[in-house]
Image 1 (cartoon, rainbow, N blue to C red):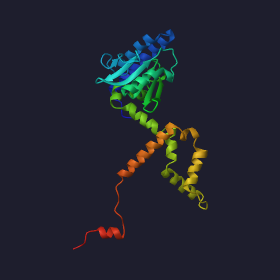
Image 2 (cartoon, one colour):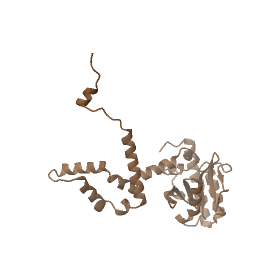
Image 3 (cartoon, rainbow, N blue to C red):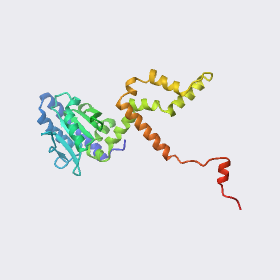
Amino acid sequence: MAAIPKKVSERLVAGLKRYQPILSAAKARDVGEADTVTIIKDMLADVFGYDKYSDVTSEHSIRGTFCDLAIKIDNQLQTLIEVKAIGLELKDQHVKQAIDYAANQGVDWVLLTNGITWRVYHLVFAKPIDQELVLEIDFCALSPRLESDIELLYLWCKEGWQRSMLGEYHIQKQALSRFFVGAMLQTDAVIDVVRRELRRVSPDVRIDSDQIRDVLIKEVIKREVIEGEKADEARKKIMKAANKALRATPVKPAKGKNAAEDQPASD
C-alpha cells in the first residue's frame, strides 16, 4: 500500500482515540438509528476527512425512502452508506435496497455500518446484481498504534478514495482468493511445472498433464472452489490476462535457413 500522508495518518489516529469511547458509550445507551447517523456524519468529517456539508449528503432516495447517507466528491456520487442502530447486528440483507439503487446509479461501492462495525461491499454487475463483502472491521477493536489498522481506515477516507486505494485493495484480495488460486492451479503453466517436478522425483513413472489436472480437480481442490460463478469469473480473468500477455510478447525472428535468407546481402 502507498504511504499514508503524515497529516492524514495523524487525523486517523486522533479520530480513533476520540471516537472509540464515544461509540462505546452510545452502545451502552443503546441509541437509535437517528442518533447513530449523527455520530457517523461526525466520523466521516473528523476521522475520514470528508466535508460534512459538501461531500456528505442524505438526498438520495431508494424506492420512495431515503438512503441514510451518500458520499460525493466533486459532485460525483461515489458510495452509499446504509446506517443501522449501534446495537443492531449487521447482516447482508440490510444493504439490499442500497445495492439495488447503487447499481441503477452505476456506483461500485456501498458501506454498511452501525458505527462500530463497518462493512464495505463491492457491487458485482451480473444478473441478478450481487454484492461482495470486501472488508469488515470493528472500529472499537482497532489500535491507533498499529500501522496496519490505520491503513484499513485509509482505504475509504477521502484521500484514500481519491487515490483509488479501496479498488487496489479489492484487486489484491481477489488475486489471493481461493477461487483465483484454484483457477491458477489448473492452468497449463502451473501443471507443466508440477509435471516437471514429479518427473524429477519419480523419473521412471510416466505422468502426463491430463492426469495431474484430473487429480487436482477431483482430489486436491475443493469442489466449491472450482465450480460456480466466482470460479468461472476467476478463470475468465486468468485467461484474459494470459491472452493479453501473449499479444504483448514480441515475435522473435526465426533461426536457421530462413533467418539467414532474411539477412541483407553483403557487398
